[in-house]
Image 1: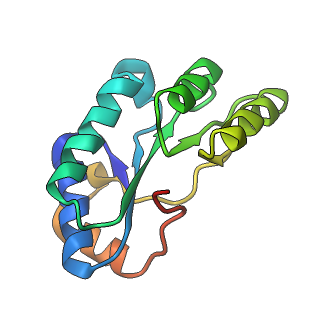
Image 2 (image 1 turned 90 degrees about the vertical axis):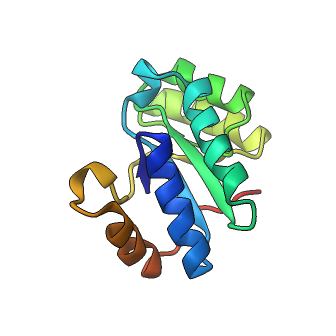
Length: 137
């Protein structure tokens, strides 16, 4: 599931808790460019602290920003998504592996709450039928 705000993250984790399923939250594409990795991680951390019994993990969508991807690894993100040039993807993948960070190089389908009329029911429907792309370490 994609999150833009703390409310988005809370909604997803609340539904995950109600269903008893793990939740993977991914930042919105390019959000790292305007919000920053630390701010986006803080949103996840706050929501996560409110739903401690719900298995949850966060992934930073770095787009093609290699510096953001490496910074995410250094700052403790459990997962990163990086879509840059092939030669850079291989380097970032190697660094991520050394730090046991889940690495994706393509976007997989995810629910974006900004496309939903009712976020809670959309989250419920989405999470009831999906396996998370990765779990928290």
